[in-house]
Image: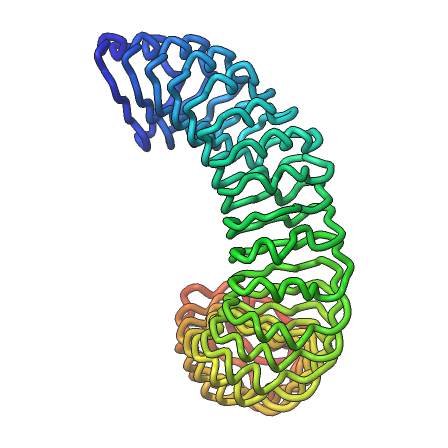
Amino acid sequence: REIGMLTHLVKLSLSQNGLTGQLPDELYDLTMLSLIGLERNQITGSMATNIGRLTHLRDLDYGNNKMEGSLPIALGSLTNLIQVYLNDNQFSGQIPAEAVRKWKSVVSIWFYNCRFSGSLPSEIGSLGFLEYLNIGRNELNSTIEFATELGNLRNLQRLDLNSNKLYGQLPTEFSKMNALSWLDLSSNHLSGSIVGNMKSLTSLRLGGNMFSGLPVATELTTSLKFLKLHDNPLESTFPSELFALTNLEKLNLVNTSLHGELPTEVGKMTNLSAMLLQYNHLNARIPSEIGNLNHLTTLYLDWNQFNSTIPKQLLTGLTSLQYLGIENCSLTGTIPSEIGNLVNLSSLALSGNRLSGPIPSELGNATRLWELLLARNQLTSSIPEQLSNFFRLSFLDLRDNLLTGTVPRSFNEWSKIHDVHLSGNNFSHGLGNLFCSAEHLGILEADCDLFCICCTECSR
């Protein structure tokens, strides 16, 4: 409580010090304070109404604590505020409009991951200097009509309202925020579309809503680099409008009820580094033109209905690929030997298909692999010795195939192996003490009739 004696103190910064308990009332005697930085502690209690005495305050950071209760209207007395961080606390109730409308100099408002409810005060639209507004992961439960006033925020660069309970159609006024580069409205109940020129927008995150069509005019948002529309009922073929987004780097259309063929034109989206299309109804074939996307590091096509072979051209061109998932897609044919070109691969998931033939020995070139999932196929022959090159491997799933021979003893060199599934094959010899020296082994599963000293479970 002696802190109240520091009456000339201008800046108080005690972040990440393990402070506990409630803030002393004497703190609000320090009327010369321009900065309070108490983030990342274990401070409890509510925000005192006496905070209104700190009229010189420009930076207020109570983020990442355990504070609770509603915000006092007295916050409106802090008319010099530039940055307000209350994120990751347990504050609740409505955000007081009477306070917010007086923050005419504020640039950043971060109320992320609290328990604020009701509607966002439309008065925020009068804060002409506001650049960053993050009220994601709260309990706002109103229509998004309040956002009409946000169109006045011509300096706003980031707007984050994700993971609330907002509903209704997006207001056309959104397009007036010409400086907006980041818009996250994901995990709400929103619909409609954004109309107009948002030439500065680089990141658009609208996943987990009720959009029934592409909610953005792609010809007016060519600056987009990140587009996340997952878990929306788009119910269409692959949107050809996306081909206009020549700067797009990451595309997420997971679980959007897409159907029909994946167009060959997708191979022209040459800046893509990640394409996620799982849980849709795409069919016909996987276009080999995807192999033209030489910046691609992540490709997930799982749970579609391609019913085709794996194109060799796809494996030849994607030399930067790190994550490849084509599980449960009715794939046929063999795993091409060209899989060995993917030397940067970290995860390969091809389970739940109708792939046949041997596991190609060239796969051993992918020495950075930490996950190999080939279960529930019709793979034959013995496991190639070259797979012992996977010195980072943690997860191996080869169950329910037609593999024969002996599991290579060299697999004992896998020091990081954690889960191994080998049941449902036709191995001719037991595992013995294989994997027994693996320090991190959690699961070792094989057929019950195979001799296995360190198996944790068996099947059949």
